[in-house]
Image (cartoon, rainbow, N blue to C red; front, side, top):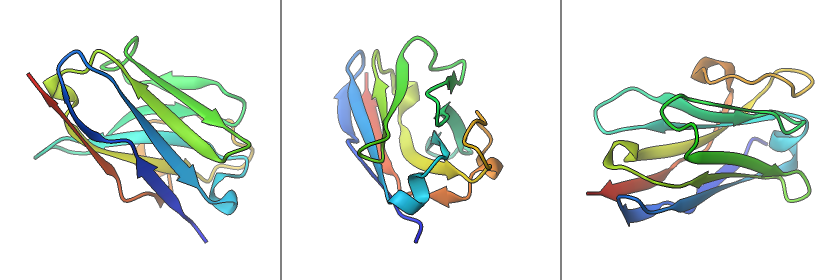
Length: 126
């Protein structure tokens, strides 16, 4: 059964850091690329970062140099380290799994992912 659970969100001041975690069931995690997405208030969902099974990564331009995605294939967990946060990073953050065979794709398109968590809220104050 598909199962993704995000944690680590919260409220932080601008310039601060947060680390999000996404724990996945073995079925959901196995040899899949994983991604982080976010949906700011009143805006559409956008891709933030993705990581394939082999550890290659891709980032949205808006977070390059500030966010780092990583994964622990023993713990079936994906992380998003967020540094130098700004109010523009305020959003609900979602973890998602990419069903593409082989686990090599690096996509930031939500339509390429077929399993989603419930999300965790990140609020950055100025």
